[in-house]
Amino acid sequence: MTRSEKAEILENYLSQEPENYRDTFKTDIYLFFNEDFTKENPLLTFLDSFENKNEIENWVDFVASQIVLKFDEEFEQIGDFIGEFITTE
Image 1 (cartoon, rainbow, N blue to C red):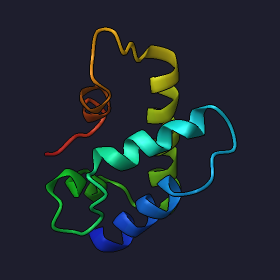
Image 2: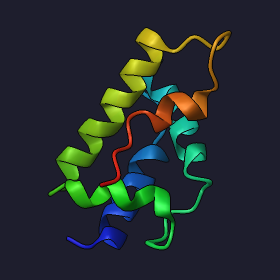
Image 3: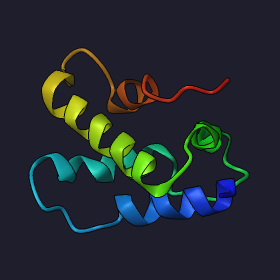
């Protein structure tokens, strides 16, 4: 699967209607990527570590859950918090 295909999966998953409170944070994750889901966006290089759609969706769900559990808007910016979950190697 190419990075472009993975980026499309990510964009589509982040664009889905929220089903619960956790899902409302998908918009923040979407905005973190500057609404740019092209392979040229250097923020998307972390997608290379994923093998399939399920892994990408699990990552989104994990990050959204971490926002619910640990994010404190008084002490940090949402973009910085999300960025901690992106590994580019």
